[in-house]
Image (cartoon, rainbow, N blue to C red; front, top):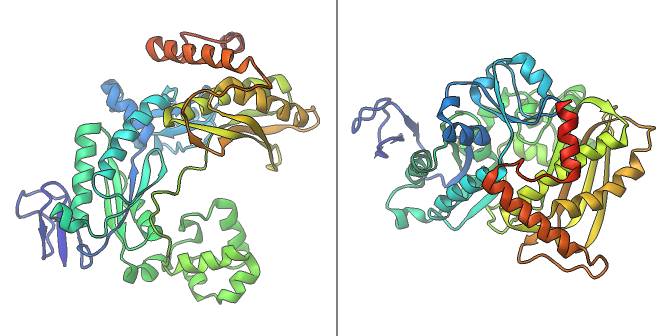
Length: 424
């Protein structure tokens, strides 16, 4: 048995609850602790944690990061989760569950600044870092013991301490021998956790879990599996591979691998993010084009802010809708030149929306995104639309004013009209 103290980083070949070196209780033990090298690092309620870091008055209050009463919860702190609040929940429902919650709008620039600081500390551990999102990543620490003088588990514990002390947020770590099990482990001990799940323990650990426990199996798919007689992971373990493939195609093969804890995917630092996007679910389903356009503008600004914060541009704009009966509708249009500007995203998605929102169908969700990403260098000049450069300069000036004086310092005519509508 090998035991790691997560506070003083002592590693001992013995099993103990209280660290003999520092006397603290934050320890993790496993026979394979010294040999496992694949980790999943996930920030705890990241946006909410950054907001509490920057405003200590919020520290002991349930906090929701998200839109207005017609919007949805982007994320929430663990205190709010005790009341049943969850990400993507309609705001009215969240506030009904937790009326004393403090609601703050998301500030993606601030979150990306914290995310970049955390990423820099990951890169200092290993060149094999694969970001999944702004607040989580896979790390392969194979061969780093000689470089850092400690086993990978101790390097990860030091990373968690540095992030907490220097960035001001906490992370949870899952350690294993492959990405699937590392991701599974990181969910077991949140927040501020460190869990180990070795391949030799995986089958027994997963067996009695519901199929929805498997990362990647959503509620709808879980219901489908249940209808087909698969209720626990053990049911999938016992199933014949050919039967799973016959019923679910390539997904059946993936289910079989996950059920046994197998995953041959490598940690790939070049697996770049494919898109940036934003979406919202409505308080009430709507077929009103004007209402949908208002939401589309807000989401275009959010998507552009995210693209600017990440330093990327996209050449494909995607409009996403979901009807009142949950039917998805997706429309895409390629641009003449890549962009990260809200005005260009909105101007491209708006006619796509107009073709769908004819008044015959009610929608419950709208989203917009940029894909075909590349690094931002300079605003492109579009010969087909020579006014692009002028709009770009105006938006950049607006961004600087918002950054200096607040989000509402500069508004477009549409944004001002929407603000008056919300206040009324």
